[in-house]
Image (cartoon, rainbow, N blue to C red; front, side, top):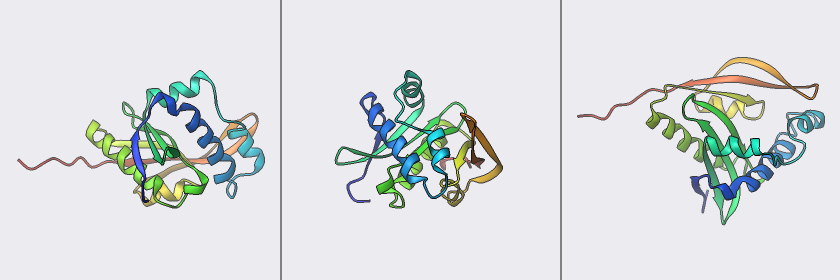
Amino acid sequence: MNGLVIRPYRPSDAIGLATLFHRAVQEGTAKHYSAEQREAWCDRPPTSAGWRARVEEAETIVAERDGAHLGFMTMDMDTGYLDFAYVAPEAMGKGVADALYAVIEGRAKVQGLTRLETEASLLAQPFFKRHGWRLLKPQEVERGGVKIPNAVMEKRLVRRFAAA
């Protein structure tokens, strides 16, 4: 994707990423989830201190072009849990997620992680399968009394050692 920049998160990204997250849920997942499910998942861009803490305490990687946020991924580098993986609706299917994922997996390997885990939406599951993840179990999470299907997935990482 021409002009795409992948970089670490900056505190000034918090509001833009919250808006991107909301748009990705509301617009990007519309073919996979009902309006009721999308509203329960994310009815407005998050503004809480908890949101900011989740993106600031994790390893957060941001994709942008010309200063516009196109996507982001977060991973807990202690546990290997990939929490957020979102791309702006207009950038879906254009390599943004692939570029973000390459960086996040590379950092996980450098950190010495041997296993990654996530809870993938119906939209994200094919992406993760394409990158070597496997389905552990389908599940439903409940938010505000609304059940939202997703799946627990994992990827085992092979550690590669440099030749001496």
